[in-house]
Length: 446
Image 1 (tube, rainbow, N blue to C red):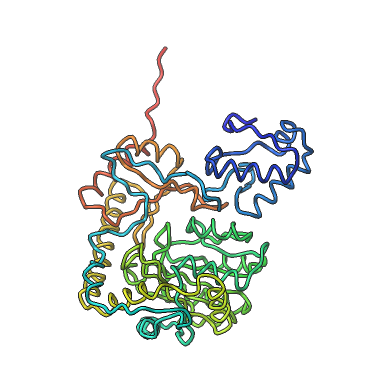
Image 2: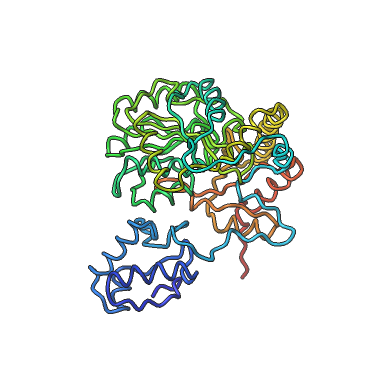
């Protein structure tokens, strides 16, 4: 056994080993990120052949339970698709939590007030999946952003939409080009579906053109792009980069394109969609979520796409939940029609931009490089994530370690959510982070 792995395996076959690992994850005995023994060591410990253990690890990778990387071995994934008692990062009493990625509750609309203003009729089986009024309002938004809106459906959030689009077109083993660093929950979803992640490097303007071309030339069947407010780096496409990426996709017209505009109007940047930049792949989809602007508990997103993709997604939705609650759809309609809500969204976008830029300015002042062109987060490269997160926690700051957001080829970092960060807090945090990252003064005694 490795020193870091205390769990003792007892399986007597590949299927038993797979079942045992999944059960240990479900019980909490094996935690996300926990390393597993090498194939040869585990084989010797339980009396199995290395081929048998390697086969079990391959199946666990296919299910998204474990990850294997060169020189790091095999470990439990950061978000394995198994229900378990694992908790979020602990927040000690009095600590300032910058790890969650949440919007500011003070900048979300009052749902109770809107609920008293809208009509909530009883709806039964057999009625349309989406409210026509919701689709009409969504089309106005999408048309203004240059996204074709002829075919729309309503999904239970952006990740629900992405999962169904992927399921409609891809099969286990297919490769998907993703931003690196990128959204940890998306990585977990792709692994759970047995898809292979093809990392694409990015800068503050989003995916690098050459890196995307490289991923597509190596067989990526789909690409997931965040046009603005990229999580965790805040990258946002401009018109030039969107056009360059659209030109690359023109070379691979059968690639499935998915755009995830999860922040929408509170991203703090204009949307530059690859669709408006000239990308016309045979299969495409674009999500528009309401979670960050109207509230994370409003699990609703509008999905635009080509007619074949939307038909497949709607068909799978009919086979499962059937539709997104019309009560929820009616609430979103009421919010979108309320002028005061639009004013609040504009205020939220301006406030998030000010708070994000304030932290970036404070970090520059103390000599720390960071990234955050848009959105609610700032990405801060650090030499060693665990040390930075631990040292900041001792000072009362809870940060998200970057490991879950990174694939091979990206550098360590930490993510700070700035949505509620005040200017005095930004200055204090920057100063304390600079102290944490300062090289220790060497000393010696005779």
